[in-house]
Image 1: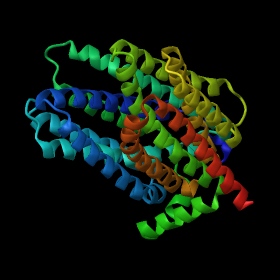
Image 2: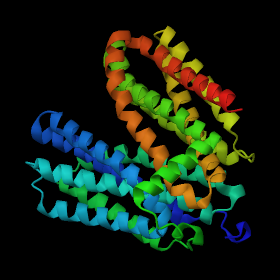
Image 3: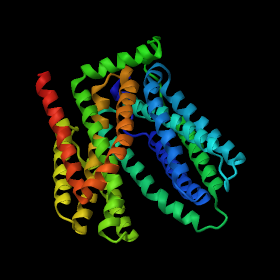
Length: 397
């Protein structure tokens, strides 16, 4: 499609992931609260989410070839309608006071499979619809909307819990409604697939191997994905460390913890908005510069135990991770051929989704060993990632 015929902004493409993210966040909020309340412990919840994470990684593996082979809008619609029906059916049959293990696992797996297909399809569609010079602005607005959904969800969920008639079934219905709305917005999307994605008829595994080779030969994309794997481990460690740090050094004060999380969210929104106002095309070098600044802030936070410094690190974490994520999304969309976008995004998400749980596992032990000094370790991990991509760049020159 000629770039001149594309749009500068697409409301359906903006609203579809927003309402889906809001519904998912509310669902997870309700799941965490009601399942722990019903069972009295968190082990069942951990097992369900762990299985869901494995399914999500497996979905990432196969989603890319299918997203590149078939109509991407159709894949988004199918993911939404299957997730809608799953939530609706479970809301009708589930005993919310005594949840059955297999029903929770089945529902979580269906939603995670839908996410594994929907997300790369949605990101691959963007450069087919949005003008290349407006990609960064659209991605910035989209990311800001998703951050807003993450902020609104716990606030709205907390309000719902004050209503005594609300139970887990209510959250299932709300999530079903979000998938239905996402389906409607996607249906309204003006999208005509480019001919290139229907040409390949090779088997899924062969198509995936071709995608892996494509990523390996796209040196800038390859290095960005490798670096984001380091960031994924850092994200997991930082998220795990925050409640640990507040509990051990600030008397477990819930208000102090909420202030930290609020500054992460505010930083994320301002990071997204800063790129909306930036008229320059995103550059890989700028991403590495942001990562270096974040690494220094984390290292300084690990040297001194100070709540004000913790708040600064929370804001910096939200601000710079948001900017890096948006910038990387735009760079990958610009550098990747339309026919390979689905596979590139699925490979990227596969690396991210694999490293995130691994990072949680590893930093669970590291936090016990290094305590507050784990911030120093996290900053060092980011610097290590920068060193790795620097050496990869020198070796490939």
